[in-house]
Length: 130
Image 1: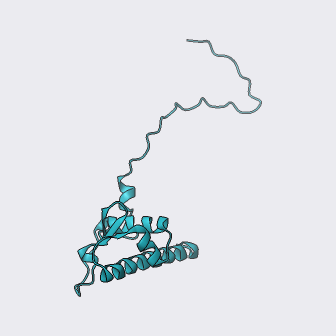
Image 2 (image 1 turned 135 degrees about the vertical axis):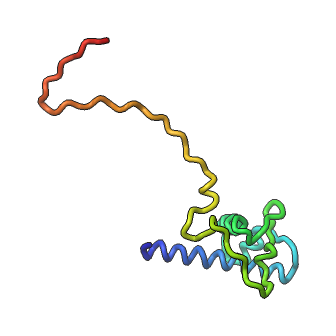
Image 3 (image 1 turned 120 degrees about the horizontal axis):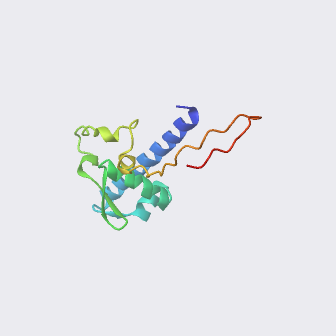
């Protein structure tokens, strides 16, 4: 992995942690689900960035979407003093993301191979039609 990819991963991880910390702080102040815009504002992110990160956190079981644009931490994500449960194999940071695993590959129509091209300067004769 090169330095640019490493740096982008660290920035993305920092944004994700900031988002989860913001949601945890909101839930300490007022338990229950919170609106996307409020969570994003508390974390210093745009609603678009927060939405993408919350969707990933939901896939990994850290947050739960309770309604249109409302999120809450799940029980395993709350601070309980117990160790966190192990991640499922599909959640491995180096593995294939779960969402990508569910997307089928597009169907591709195959054409028959083109006839070979004669070398330059070769004499071409027409073959009789069958």
